[in-house]
Image 1 (cartoon, rainbow, N blue to C red):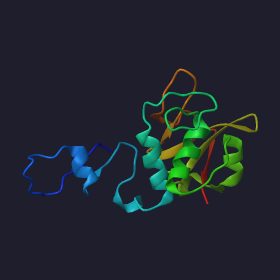
Image 2 (image 1 turned 90 degrees about the horizontal axis):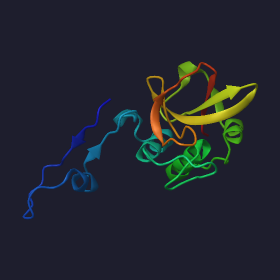
Image 3 (image 1 turned 60 degrees about the horizontal axis):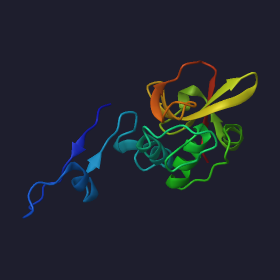
Image 4 (image 1 turned 120 degrees about the horizontal axis):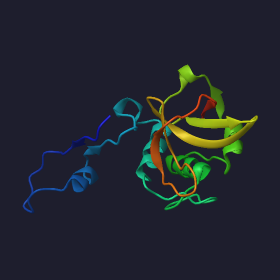
Length: 157
């Protein structure tokens, strides 16, 4: 997906509107890896848009926003802003979600990474095998391909 801006037709004495002003008065902006209109009303899609809006925020262990995040802090923050509560850690979030098959995953569902029987990382599914996540120390919140097959998916209830 690419970024699109729809600017409403307006008459203004002040002149041209910036894209951000247009959005504020009723336009739309789409972000790569964020679902379009069909999913826009779901809590999961809202959480995904919120996570994507944090692109570039630095990873800090134990941080849960609004300017710094670790992996589960980002998912918790995004879902809280979308109207759902999640526990703080990736493992606790895994235990709180309804586990779903890969074929049932939707934008905004949680993606859990496993090693040795434990959940060690979480992100928000963005479609096309990609997630929004806060990877590790020295990185920032970003959109990235899922790098392993050792993942499971969860739908936030």
